[in-house]
Image (cartoon, rainbow over all chains, first blue to last red; front, side, top):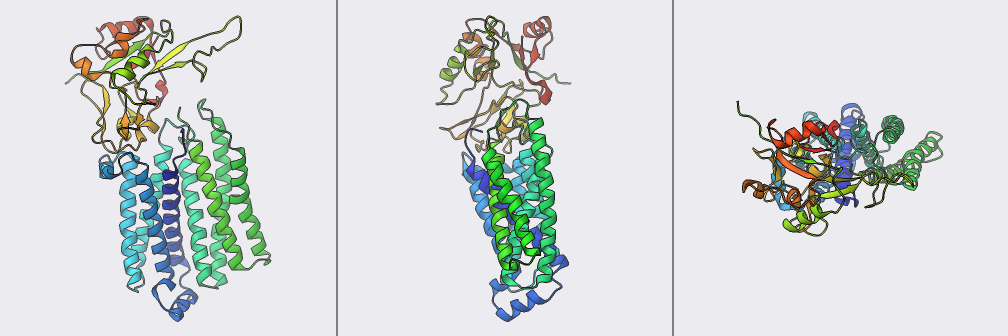
Length: 281
Length: 188
């Protein structure tokens, strides 16, 4: 790839955060929202934007919207975008279908939340599944092309999906910690994040090994500095912050804010590295 | 049963002298803008033109002309979201620039990097084997212009054609067959 496709980086980054956040929100709704603390705070403060449901749906739809606009900028003819719905066998068409589906469902959830109603679990589940679908087809859109060996790897879809979930988890944790002091729920969700971070570690190592073994003679750019930054900021720094949190040398709100910042920056660097490696055969 | 028709090309790399006449005639004839090349000539083993491989006193200078392989199973067609990239009845793969949105997903999927982005038309463009000339009974510009007569054009789907006999006689091989697209350009 001769120049960095900024519009595609923005699209994948924001749409992945959008879907990841909503998936994590569903997880919270399914397993942890039985705890009444957050609900009580919402009732006490009043207003639409104090509800975690409204915050998540509004944030998700804004991120997806910006991402979709960015992806249109990648096209030579953005106003012909409807032509992209023609071939269901193409991953780009699939991406368009799932983006539109996820967007429509997010819009319904947002309207629901603005009406002050508690969103139904079934609707949220459907929306989260559409988000997961979008994550998957976006990942496959990069994993399938045989012309770009660094992307055409078995681990590419896993890299994308784990990255989206990990970014979604920190966005949701930040929203939650700003809203509630229920350390019990927060701790449980931080443990889920820790699990994802460990998976990310192993997947990153495996992907690096896979890259070093099979790029069919294509010379990849030297990205040592970026790779070191990605590991330090995106993988090691959150671990250090987590350690400080467990040692209680950091407040929960400070710790989660730091984790959010390191993960969001680290994953951003990771995306840049991924696209810079997109050298054609 | 209707027999599949497939035009193709054989390029004799032992005759190619790397003069780039094919590149120039293609670019000029199709009036392609700056940076858009449907036909290229690569110096084998080097990223620099005319830089030989090997060591003195045995340097080796081999050229490989490259163009769209008009594959039997073209990855660009299968993955084009719009249907703009299509395979004609005569096997030529071409792009409808009125429909193309310029997403370049075809380029990502093509093992030969054949579809290129046209910065003027804001769509993808590619070699169409000079379809307009073939329809008039002529050969593609690159074949006609090659001073070394290194290029041979014909109906590779017909076993009795001259080009099919040449492929068999010289044991010509396609480039990157491992990608399963069944290319229609063969190399000697």
